[in-house]
Image (cartoon, rainbow, N blue to C red; front, side, top):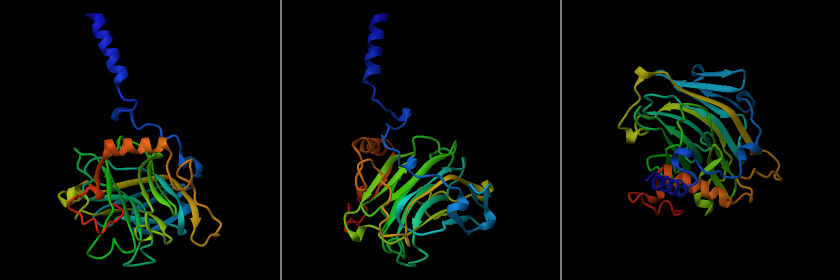
Length: 297
């Protein structure tokens, strides 16, 4: 009986997948964050709004917070036409419904009402549910006005983002947009046409703000300021790419060992694992959406 039990146990062990939810993602085999040097906050960014709700420690790490009076935001010192943009972020635990902590690219101040945007947004939650990481792309005004056309893909994470800092990044070049979490590609948005891809220079931003009308379960749960302040912590900033006013010979960093327009087989396997286990929404799979407005689907 003991021999039979041992044999079955060994069979079970060898049949387990090489990477399960509890073990974390399979190795992507390539680590684009290692190709870009880290900078301090003051080397690449400045306060944009809510200066009284922002603290820079030794010029490197940044803390921003939201309370009933204001949130806070920051902006890169330069615009870019392509590049790798990243930061390590640690989120607040507990009740954070209605609150968004973000890191994103945008040219909204240059093209008001007709802007482009690439988002990483952490949607606040209630204590019994995990944070949602929302990725999104807006092109030439699709995020402006009353008829918003978002290209959202949402994820839960394979770790608790309130326990420690984790690295989140956007790689944007003329061929593709890739969203990374700790160097694992979770989403690739290729350039299928000029009409569905942002091509104008953008700045890097971050912020914490009240989005109670939609952020948590479609607005079901609102920001509750009895839990204030809501805090977002950032460090390990990375800005690597081609500035808008830089030389035409500049080449943006690659997101893959194979070049600027595709992922490796190992990276695709890691991305498939993330999407299979942690993707919770994909606009292309939403039957309530009008997909004539998102022809890339």
